[in-house]
Image (cartoon, rainbow, N blue to C red; front, top):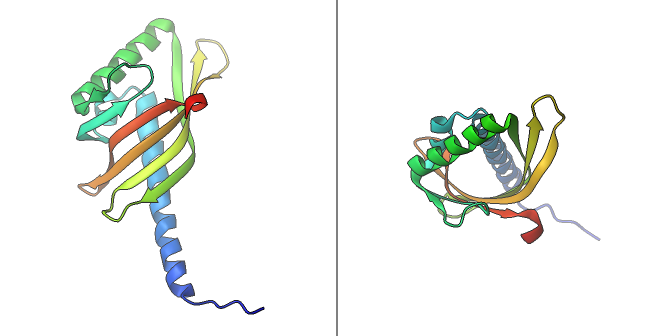
Length: 153
């Protein structure tokens, strides 16, 4: 049996390009979740496009635009302060699908865990998060986010 290694240099270049892109997307999500967990609402909303759409199972209608996103996160931060707990987000199992037009479709698991004041952390929710990412002004931004419960995805 003979194995032909045609196009190896091209395959390696594509693999290196994809690896770099994948690392960029991982860094994007790490940054986005860190500022979300810090309740930096305006900076978090700025990681979305101006006309972004955000769908989550906790809301009956999608949140639209950066101003709506900032308001949604601000209200959640206030609820956490009153409850005396902290929410944190962890993203894993990331799948990145580049599209011919330069847009990225991503899908990942999103864990939300809660830490009550003086208590230990526990997983509160497990979600599937699907995004459409666009590159604008040299940075990735979320144009559309659809969050579904893991048991319904």
